[in-house]
Amino acid sequence: MRLTPQQYADYLARQCKADTFEMVTVECELHDCIIGHCRHAGWIALHSRMDRRTGRELGEPDFTILADGGRIFFIECKSAKGKLSTQQQALHAWAAKLGHKVHVVRTFAEFLEVVK
Image (cartoon, rainbow, N blue to C red; front, side, top):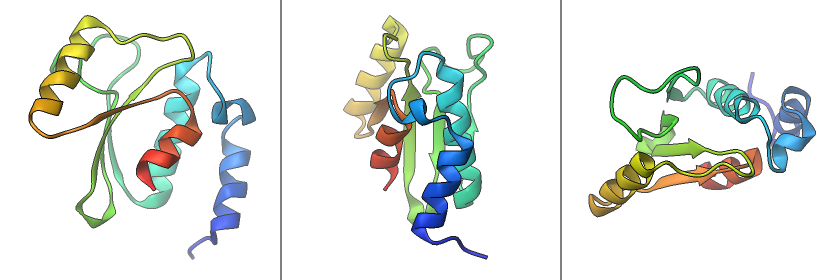
């Protein structure tokens, strides 16, 4: 069964704290909302662990999302005052040089805007 857009918005409101649509102080709340959205949409979300640095590429985005229609999103989540590390800035610049965009989102609303 597919949800209507309003049913989905109601679902998100129940699953995600209201302040997640605004700036978050705890980044993991934003991660949880993004993971839930991807599962609901049937997308593949490749997600980095939050409890330690990545073992793959320094500066790697928090999410690589394989969405419908061949779309791919690179998402870096930050809290309201969170800053990109030097490694993240370098990877974002390298990705841009190759024609890719790493989206930095601080709210769930910003994430939804990126993936719409």
